[in-house]
Length: 377
Image (cartoon, rainbow, N blue to C red; front, side):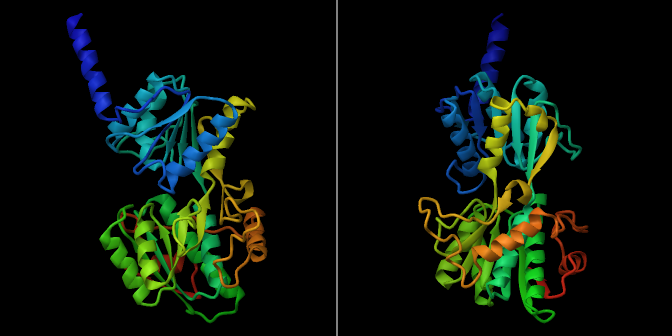
């Protein structure tokens, strides 16, 4: 008996070492944070806002847990702690939770998991296994990126930049869509072949660093007018460089106009609305089966992606006021084309590099770029 108690205590201490120990973990709906804080202006914050919106409206206890270690073991320990605290629903924002949720879905069969931007799979494999207690939610980033590129060129910009984090599928899709949107806008404007220049770069991380700022600074010095900052905290580095260069930025995931005057718009995902939709299916409409055991894409047709169309806290404000000429009327027209399928941006291409970093030739050939000249760095 003593050995059993000693072993149990060791397991408890291990779990506590992998999550924040001072957090109140008792809640029916729990969110486990990814890298960064709950106010990261990105995935954590957007997802948490959805939890808070639904839980407060329906008087359901809710909380979040920040893992001490951002590893599969750390994420799983945080999930275990949430379940021990009474969580019936666990929200995990980001593809880094894929392995942890793969383990947790079997370990906690009575708990429902909402995995955003990913699908469960075992470590060392990408073979997806989605149990009936998991809703895999993904987003059509290629559509949101398309709108960003289209808006930039329609606004008169001809020298664009893209700074992605790591070349994971979501970031790739944002970038591919961005190029295609810029290409189509250039065609509509009747611009010459090669009239649009795009500098295309992956930082290899999602961090705010001096190196990332220096890269953005160099791009601006070389004539880039706007950079689509598609890599979490990489955006902070780009905004800092843009502020010094008096240049422009397009944000990502959530509306980042409130972070910097340099942000003219953001290619957003409906993080909060998608979380609310799944929670409503669980608690209000008895339609969990719609999401259970499968991947559901949120796109333009169900308002899962887009550019911001309102300014929070000011109903009379114009969300397109940082553009020179691109406006909501033009936006609504191109958005409608995505909704009805008249425009269908390519989401993925064949890339030889194991890390997923496409060459300029691969981008040009497979995305059918004529008006755009891509330079990778």
